[in-house]
Image (spheres, rainbow over the protein chains, first blue to last red):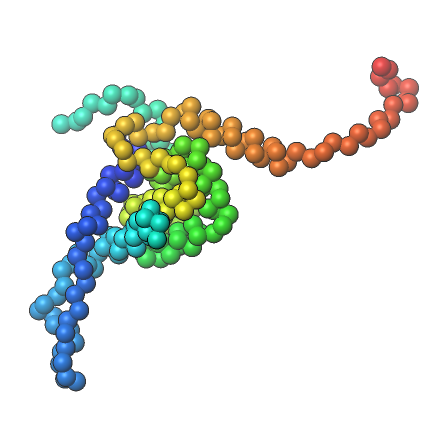
Length: 69
Length: 163
């Protein structure tokens, strides 16, 4: 029985293959800003994705510390 | 098919334990203070960025308590205090761990991240006892005040006990 799921949760966060938010290029004033048919993948809207983004920032900081930057 | 449990779980709640108090009397039975992951992250990051917290957590990590244990304890106490629900807590654990590791590396200490291998998920009682004693010693050091010898008056009454 798992009493502390922290290890599994941490290892399941796959930060390396984190999907980047894509900027949709628009041109002109009347260009559609949102394209309902080309919705970004659902993963981006998940709270876990936002957690992963925060984690990536912290990990970069850690790597900078390790490298002595 | 049920998986047979190797060791009996003796600290599990007994049936009906949740009904020993009026419904809603416990903080976790109330609506969560931070219902979304974003709010919970903001709460934890704000709390963990304080100087006081960093000093304390560095001491605990220096004593050998794994990051996984600290992170799980933190989110569990958040649930018990009614700050957020258990689902939000689970989602915030990896971020809490990352922040704890950043604090430890910033302080330049050796720490156990608890990720190395699949092992006993519970921190050993001996280690917890060691941490408890260490913290108790520090509390006693702070509380210890220089003793002032006060002149003791000898009891003079008829019924007073004689030395």
